[in-house]
Image 1 (tube, rainbow over the protein chains, first blue to last red):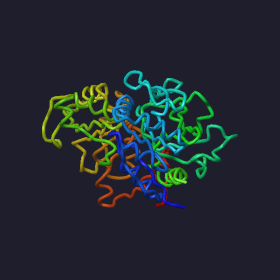
Image 2 (cartoon, rainbow over the protein chains, first blue to last red; image 1 turned 90 degrees about the vertical axis):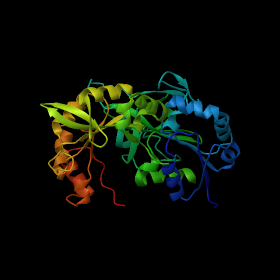
Image 3 (cartoon, rainbow over the protein chains, first blue to last red; image 1 turned 60 degrees about the vertical axis):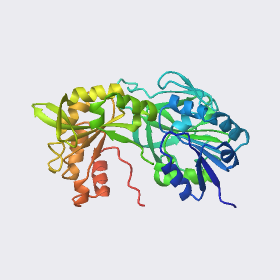
Image 4 (tube, rainbow over the protein chains, first blue to last red; image 1 turned 90 degrees about the horizontal axis):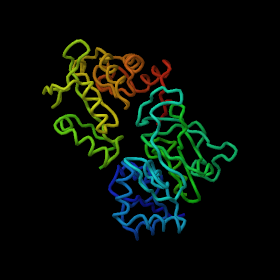
Length: 214
Length: 162
């Protein structure tokens, strides 16, 4: 099998170097670019993102990348959204006013409540290592990027907002922050989104990246 | 070129708008407000700048609250009085801030022994702990500090052998 050629979409927000290192460690040749031809020529595409939703959408639009991402999906090139990159896949977000997203996954992005259901205040952003579980144990993780992971493995999260997929089928892993269930991994066809950072989550995350590159 | 977060102290005090600008552009999780606190009275601390050299007249609790309103996503709170002393964290300082703001607090300054971590997390409400000297001079190792924290019931990740 030839070496996977993964592209990290560079739209000027966030830290791309650790994603690049993670993918290279898993055997990919990595290009970081905003060039549409290069993106569409690659075997795998990563939409990274650390930052604010509105700013990121604005950058994607300014660079003409929204239609490129739709084309990636159309061509069934595997797409992995990480953290904000996952949230951008949804229809809209509440971060700094309501902003439309890419709309590739139905649902919206809302602020993580700063209180538990019992009214105990909790810190926002949600930062740290958290274990994740199967959203639907009856379906499990077979044929998803989590196929090589076990329920209860821990990954590194850092976020203030959370995605709320409207179709439960798109939600494959959850974590708990206080008593709030947060969508940790979502997927639909060739599109996967990780709320946590697989590139910063040790072996657990590398298993996901390796599976993505297959 | 690969940074996940920036800690800002002096520049934020000179221009608090910078906090909002950073958090709007890069997200609040990227904007760590670094506060260097020096005790100036009973349960009163003043924020200092320029690596603990310059006074600002700002009350640390007030400044922390304002910083969070402006968009800081995390606070790195260093006790100037404890830094480098190995006497343990200023638990009263950390508690004074952690009970007043909604963002995670990283306690910094004074970790002399692994048990100091338990004190500042359990009694001070710290969400994370910064340590340097204890590791540099090998009075503690990450794996045993982690084990001590776990034994005390703190939520730390199981140690993963590389």
